[in-house]
Every structure is written in C-alpha cells, then in structure tokens.
Amino acid sequence: MSVKVESAGHIELDGDRTTVTFERHYAFPRSGVWEAITNPAQLAAWLDEAVVELRVGGRFEIYFDDEPMLGVVTELIDETVLGYSWHAGRTDESHVRWELSDEGDGTRVLLTHTRLSSRSAAGFAAGWHHHMELLVALLQGGREAWDDARFDQLLTEYRATLSN
Image 1 (cartoon, rainbow, N blue to C red):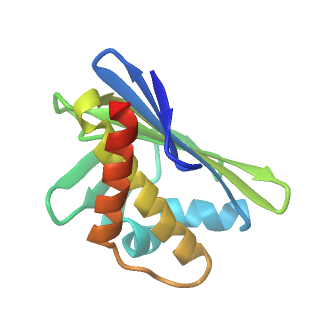
Image 2: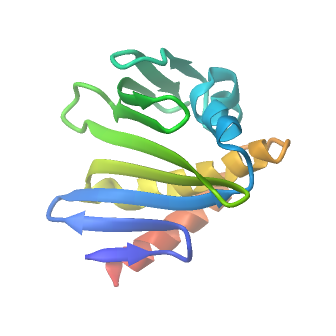
C-alpha cells in the first residue's frame, strides 16, 4: 500500500517494513542545502544537536531531547548523497538517505528513510515533514523552533491517511 499526505511524504508499506520518502525542490544552491544537512551547527538549527564525522564509517549522531539517535555514515558522495544508519546496531535500526541534485533554479532533495516498522511510519513521516519545514526556514535565513502542535497535526493526518 502507498499513501501520501498533500505534497508531503510518501509512505510505502511492505508487510511489517515501511519506507518514508520526501521529495522537495528548494530554491537554494546544492552547496547550501548540503551544508544544512551535514554541518552540526546548521543541523542544530533545524534538527537537533549533532555530531557528524563526514566519512563512510564516521559517526552521525543526533541528540534529541527524548533519546539520542546514534548512527554511522554508510554512503557519501560530496554534495550529492549522504546515507546513514538510524539507531545503528539496535533491533529497530533503519536507514536514512539524502540525495541532492541541481534542478532549475535550485536543488532537488530526495529524503528516503527505509526499514522502519509499520508501527512507527506515521511518526517518522510527521517528524521528517516538520523537520523539513524547519530546514526551509533555515535556508531562507531564519530559524523556527520545533512546534509540538504542528507535529501533532501532521501525525493525525498521516495516521488518518494510513488507516484509509
């Protein structure tokens, strides 16, 4: 089954495993988007505090308030592809892959989060959706804080779409 909320995220269910995909076009150069997804200072502005060792096998860690995400860089092509494990070594380990390409006046961004449990799909979709909204604010020169009400709204929408 495949579901989509607005132009937001695409959720692909395959048994008990799920993939969440977001495709966006940002009117910003690829180098700027790359900095925002790899530079710890910029990650802190839209995702959370992070430690990044930008090499295959390097650490990719995000220190969310509720639980740290400890990952390992699995794929790296400068300013084009970044892949990392999410919760490396755990039974719920999944994988995140960013792919950037030049498109028109900006950058095409493809974010794919694979190997998620079907139980967690709506939460990851809502979380990435909202974090990508915060990423746009950063790219536009601003900074917006995480909004629990916005996340709850998105979570409700994704859950409703999945239950249909």
